Every structure is written in C-alpha cells, then in structure tokens.
Length: 473
Ligand code: FAD
Image (cartoon, rainbow, N blue to C red; front, side, top):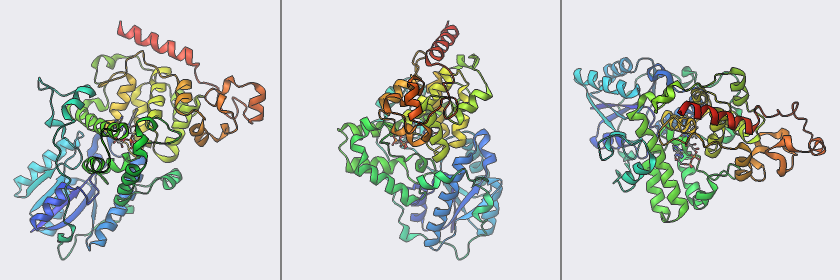
C-alpha cells in the first residue's frame, strides 16, 4: 500500500509522530508539501517566513533525496492536489500532523471528511505541541486565560514519548509523482533585503538539533538572568526552527530533562518558556478571533491611533530611542528580535505612540522568521493590555531605563545603530542628554545622524496613562 504524507509545519524526520506510525505500518511513503497560502486566511506565511520556508524545504528535500525519495512539491488547492496525487500513486491513505490555527484547522477537518467519504483512510497526529489545546481545561471546563494556573495544571502532565521513526525501514514506491521546482513557489524576496538572514541563520533539521545541543551545553545555565540581556543574547534562538517544525517541543523537553538539572534556575526557567508557547496555542485555539481582535472585548473600542508617519518611524527604527530602534533594525536585518526588546518595542508602539497593536503585530508577521500566530498574538495583546494574562495598563516600559538595565554598555544598540557607536555608554540610551562636545567627538548630530525622540518619554507616558484611564472609567 502507498501512503501520502502531507507535510506542513513539521519539516523533520525526528520526533515526527505521523512518520513514525506510518513507517511501522510498512506502507510505501510519498512525502508531499503543498504551497497553498490562500488557505491560511489573513495570516498566510509572510515575507520573512517565506524566506525560512524556502530554505527549510530545500534542506528537507535533500534529506529525502539522500534516502532515495522525492519530496513532492505542489501548489494550489490542497484537497485537489491530494486527490490528484492519490489518483496518480494509487495511495489508499493520507496522513499528517495536526495544525491548530484557524482556518487551517477547519480545512483539515473538511479535507479529512472529504477524503474519507471517497474511501481514503486519513489519520492525523500531534507533533507540534506538548499538550494539545483541547486536552486542558480549568476546573469549570473553560479554557485558561492566565499563564500561572495553566502552568500549574500542565507542568506535571505526562507527555508523549519522543517519536523515533525507524528511518532504515522507510519504503518508497518505484516511481514518484512529478514535483514542481522549489523556485516555482517564489518564496524568496525580490530585492536583496535578506542578506543579513544568510549571515545569521542556517536552516535545516540538523541545524535545529545543533542549536538545541549548543544551548543545552552552554547558555542554559545562565538563562534565568541572561535571557533578558539582548547584548549577550542568552536565549536559544530555537523559535524559527520550532515554527516550521524542524524541531519539536517534545525533543526539546526530553533533551532538557536528560541533560540538565531542572531544580536549577536556568533549566527551570527555560522549561516554563517552552510552556508559554503551549499557552499561546491554547489561547489562540480557543479564541481564534484574537488574531485580529482583542481577547478583552471592551478594548475593541479603544481609540488607537493609526498614523502612517509614526508607524514608519517605528518600523524603520527611527523613533530616537536607541533600544527601540536597535530592536527594529535587528528585526529588519536578521528577521528576529530578542524577547526583552520585543516587549520594549511593542510597549513603545502601543503606549508611547498609542498606535493600534494590530499594525505592530502585522509588521512582526511580515518581518519575523519565527512569525507564529499564537505567540505573536499573545505577545502583542500582552503589550496592548488587551489579551490573555496581559500587562496592566499602567505598566509602561521606560525605554531609557530598560536600555540601561538590559544593555548596560550599549553593546546591543551599537551593533544595530552604528551611527551611535562612538557614544559613551553613559549616553547611549539617551543621546539627547549628551553635552554638545560629547556628541561632536562621537560624530553625532542629532536630527541629522540620528533622530531626536519622536515623543518625550514623560509626555508619552502621561498621554498613555490618561488615555487608558479615561477608557477604563
Ligand atoms: P527562548 O528564550 O530560548 O525560549 C525558547 C522557546 O520558548 C522559544 O523559541 C519559544 O518557542 C518559547 N517562548 C519563549 N518565550 C515565549 C513567549 N513569551 N511566548 C511564547 N513562546 C515563548 N515568539 C514566536 O515564536 N513567534 C512570534 O511571532 C512571536 N511574537 C512575539 C511578539 C511580541 C510582541 C512578544 C513580546 C513576544 C513574541 N514572541 C514570539 C515570543 C518570544 O519573544 C519569542 O518566542 C522568543 O524571543 C524566541 O527566541 P528564543 O527561541 O531564543 O527564545
């Protein structure tokens, strides 16, 4: 018998539950990837994600080729493509690992129903999450909306074992169906905006494992404190690999438990962060409308501002606040931003500039290689104060103090804002305070080489507090 294996966001061999099960069944496998962004509603993979996907597919296709198989690439309507492939291969089964976003989830249910009604066996598995969102509920049977009780509920939850496909036992048909060339998906950008991506990332399953192992052998021990320091970059940078499923969370947790002492702060904190991702999926699954609407419905009427000049200044890293601008330029250059800085720049946009969080979320969606609807929505609504477990409205990050605390020498700022590289650490997070002589010897003319603040911190803060207070009352 022949089985079509429909790959989506699970571009790996290791810990692939559907693959492990199918190999055991002895069926011949035809691996398929269908490019169908139109089926993902408003949130199909955007520019930076597409870049990652291109390279992930290229390396995954090589992995299959090394096994003597072809990763079949198709484009169009998923159901129609699967039907065509069933007809040309004589497949009697279709399998996949589940998705949790909407409308993908509804699509999968529909496709399952259709194919089954046509006499095809269809099975789906979980390889994306530690705990599927529908498996957990509060005492009253509701979804969780706050992390801490969620964490208490799930932290000792028994996890499925890591699925280890027996790759030696893989079987393939004599012939493979035709495949499009990867280039026909047109995933790479038209202009060379992605140069920095190539310097930062290596995109394969083997790189994902190396990234995890490198982190577990080093950074994990200091993670509890270093994770907040963009200058030392004390985090794993596993997020884009996780998004495209080049590594799975079960692999991460299992290696974490095997190699680290979970009573230590570094490993313990890292484990909790992995469960933040789970929480994000839990929330998005149960409240799919939150991708574009606040979870707290009353915020639907909040008078957010939408000013394209202000938005552009933020997007391009020209707000005049070095930590904000460095973050936005890191995002543009390498498609990723440190978590602490994501919190600072998002807070700045929605609080200091009172700009609609949705525009920020959309920009992140376009520019992050780890753009993930669940985590991005949760993060943005946290900053906007309008989501699950959100920051209270009076919590407004001070971008100067945040910079001084988490990038004390200004190393991070200087990396992404070379125009400020000669400024002494004392002024790096508030260049407007530097005496004229210091600015001159650092070769910085404010307003020419680097902008003055788009809004004075005190004014931005008071304006936000007043607007939010007015809205609350
Ligand atoms: P590490 O600190 O090494 O953590 C390991 C893993 O835990 C991460 O890869 C991620 O899967 C998970 N994780 C850590 N922190 C969070 C968190 N706060 N929420 C959910 N999962 C978390 N993360 C994305 O993956 N995609 C997004 O689109 C995204 N958008 C965000 C937007 C905003 C405004 C904010 C504040 C956060 C966002 N995050 C997003 C969460 C977090 O910033 C990233 O997961 C993290 O920076 C990825 O880097 P890392 O892999 O080195 O993380």
